[in-house]
Length: 286
Length: 285
Image (cartoon, rainbow over all chains, first blue to last red; front, side, top):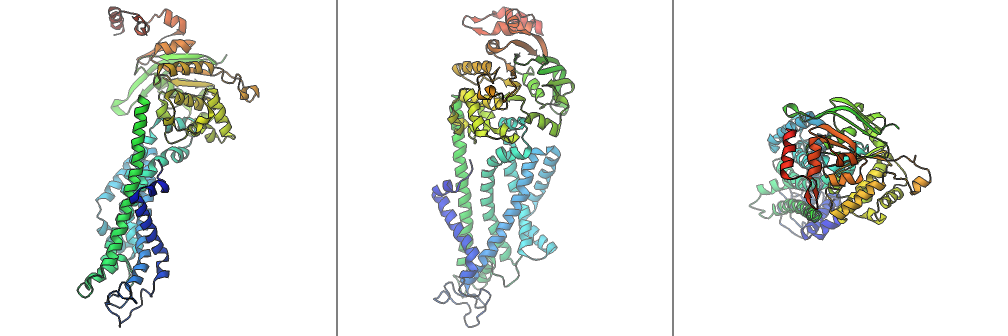
């Protein structure tokens, strides 16, 4: 069954997760416009200030408004995570589907390449890519996208394999249907739920990786604001501003939690479908 | 009259590497227009392999397979797809629950061949095909799990008949059905021998008025005897006996056929007692 928005919204966790993710997406789009101050503007008279009417989340060590930086950093952090997901989705799903159709040589080759990707550590590979292609979040997340592609490859292949060998696909082939027709009509709808769950999970994990990389200063050029970068800066001044890391950390935690909540709901929705099909089989056998 | 199916000295192997073995060893078979030919044999005798070879689903080691005048064994890639798209040969699977996409309404599955061919008025023709097999066209909106086993198999037959095929291959079409559905489907297959009689398409002269030949595969002798004109008996990949249905059922000559006929359950029990069956089995070794 295709995961529909209305079905997801009927689940409490799904509804909360989707609502939160939509809010975060709106922040990413309109955040810079809503920011009360220029996120890069320094103010030597307001260093490390606590929350106040002028600065709702306080200021950092250079007097920059934390709320404005948080809003401006949303776009960069989320776009980077999305980039990794899109790269992983394309690099994993397409060969995953093709491996079922293009014969054993293609299947063997893609399986070995994916096995090789699985062995690479995220941070080291991302650092190596930025060293090779130049320091930037795009380059770093390209590396992350490559390394998350095996997850998409495996779920796509696992979902497509039994469908490709099913009788209804054979029946379609016997009508002279092209591989593209079969893929679009019969295979993709069965693969979509698994891919949707993986996309939601990977979006959360990619956000953690983006935050980790930017926390370490990899892939960003100061003074660009990011959630991870803000967290790193605020930790340096923990003694004068002990609450400063709360806002960026909470935003990362809640967004990742929302992604995982959405993934769980999507899994539940498709799980309901699997249970009903078992019931149907029992009914048919009876 | 030219044959719809002409199989000569067909040998087919399946499997890979060391596991590869010959399943069919020099099979000959013919099906004429409007004729229903039964192919019987025990599980593993090669019935389905032979049927799949008629559709170009198996590579042929030796021999020729001519279906509606086309050498199917020589077709590859685009030529094979074009042959299938023409719709002159259709296949009815054993289990309709598996052969119909569980997520698609029946109408979409039934009309799939027309969609592949880019035909027009698909909804009307789907309704007509469903009506022809005795189904309410309103069932087109239902999914396979929402109808009975008999209705599902009728829908599968409607899918096969929508292209007005010259040859219909039915692979154990009633073995997954209960007794009443089985009888209804068998009657339907008999009626479909001349599918256009009495239909709007037939009356309008849209179709050529051809009579559909059928290859009816089964291990159930009772079903085969009820609908077929001729029977071919397949044993260990070889046709050991072929002839008119009455002759095969009434006076079988090969020990395997005699065993098969004698083992068929009747109200009085099997036709042959245990000792007679043991003697026939000994002759087969």
